[in-house]
Image (cartoon, rainbow, N blue to C red):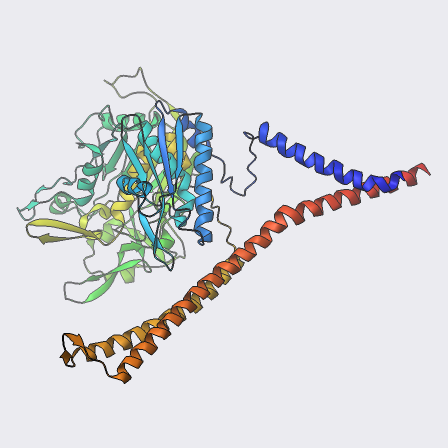
Length: 614
């Protein structure tokens, strides 16, 4: 008798245990989370947690998502859930410093007006053309605001970086001070070659629009004290005091974006002076920091070479003028992930030293069809077709730009004579350097076109050189914690069956839509002909045959519209049915299967126990 009651009793005990555990989880363990996803996409990185810990005044987050309007957009809704979950994790970690509100901006509602006031993007998606919001607005105690206009699922790996950047900008709203060190005429002025006044270089104008820029040249003996990011362009013959100042800036955690070159082709003064290659470097600094810059050789790339117009009027490929495409740009770093092309000339190469402890992340690479030639020989060639004869491919890729971070040592054992040695740093564990082995890519001719429009100069970029610069400065201008976030893994795991159903239904939908449009065009042509007929009593007179034709079309139009609705309804029905089956399996079948498995194991253990007893 007891054996017959054991199975029902076991089921009752398991059911009771299940409900007790659920209740215990909701009441006691609701704050405990275990992220078992592949790339820890539901957890915040240490950098984001550090940014949150630095918040002084509460920040309000307004997450706008068109929940009702996106009812049948499965992939978008999954990504919206991913964003909302991450924002809730931010709010949870912040302990009251982040106030999150989730808002559904329905059409013609006050919430939609609020989203428009913030400047969020309303994307037109779906067959019905509904306006879909998926953005974030944030305000701080000083009424300053920042937005993410639309969360692009294609940029999911940078989701945490974008949210952390927004929070950092509101918690630390002080402007970024950029010190620009160069002797090149980036601010414009009189051209020594032509005598005319040249405008400022576009990259320099962009920096001044985005940041507080202080410009210094090689005659300076120290960097400005308030420098947040140091941008160095074509450094030549820097004095010891300035080199020491740059070294100590790096040793104390300063951020540096440096452009060096084995041969700068845009330095007018150097061209007038002649003398072969026009190279630049940072003296002993780069070698001490663990990286080697080849200042004596120029890269030739047969595959990435740009076509230019020759003096004879023809077109030839210049192996030294390089156009780097998406395959040569790092798709994992925030500075280059979304860029398409970067153009430059006479690139140098950089490499990591064998005994270096610094972390190394290449950003720009050559193709495998590359070769190196002496910079002095390169500078003497005027015919671009001559480089083909100098080129010999060794099937080797070269690094043209890289991010360096981590441990590095100073290039100096002590401060130079006459300088203060009391605050000298011998090393750092937090080097922040982006090194680019070309300076010509900053000149306008390689990435922008200028046109005069009623006296105003209009600049149109045809390459992403300027984007690369501003991305790098923006990234370096953030906190060390923000730089450490950069990119995370992706969350998306597509429902292939749902996608197949969607594709098939949309194919039918497009076929019906094209048929309707064709008939609409035919009828409009017929109506246009009718308009040319005589009008009696102010009204259009139609013959019985014409009236029947119009009536037939209207009936057919109604039928086709009904068919369109049926196709869309069937699509939604198939997806909903599939979703219901998945819910049924997860909610009912899976727990039942687990219970049966436990019962089977219990029975096996009981039988084995009896066998041992006998």
